[in-house]
Image (cartoon, rainbow, N blue to C red; front, top):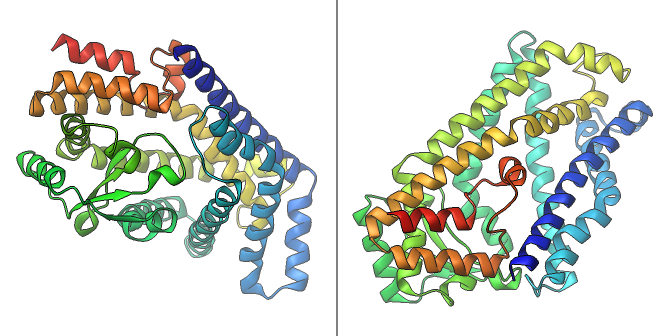
Length: 362
């Protein structure tokens, strides 16, 4: 099983790297070939002004999806079936692709529309105004996630196991965490991996248990998992992550503000307000994401270690924590002891063996 997990992880990260490189190549070719400029010119001649941006985004998004489809299919469907991590039929997978594509398109359309609107009317400090808007938008999305987006992909209902529900609510009260209620979702329709989450903001905050976890883990194991999730809230990790992401967003847009003229000139685009240069903005985010990923992963691992410590201190369920880690490693085919370079770049949680060693040391 460890060799199988290592093989799965190596393939997953190789595909992730290949996907990033492939995306950057597509963007560069799209700009260098003049196709982006030609598409904008064609739309300006044939479409109403207010439809140019939505149509440009739609055509570019569909074109990219088709070009990346083989890699996407292998990465998110074939690979998961190959390692027996899902039983989802191809037709259902494709429906999810359509839904996620539609949601992504609408979100990107709103963000990009705001980008060009602010750029037009605030030419000197647009980078700051756009950053604030994007940050605010991400917070709104986090609030809407459990009530609007998750129900589009999963059916969920209030947790039917009253004894387990009461235990979770008592834990939340003990840790001074306000929870609307506990829900279970039909996770097994899409994946056999185990998962649980504490999602939402304010009056949408709720516990969600996947059926792949609820039915395979005992009460102590579920409690220590949720104690970990509640610890993130208790330690204000969400707020800190929002701050980190806000700084990253500000840094990217300020970098674009300071350097866009030089980069756009490389691709023959006249100015940032030219819609044909939109892929350049995307390229900034991809490259900046590559550079900052190790730092963000390091911060996340630090938060996860703190949450583990609080969960163990609050519940005292050391044995349950260790058995949970073992079960999750087996169920999710997690690489228990990755190469340091893989951990440095990709792991936003400490490796399983490291988490178990920490628990045993307490």
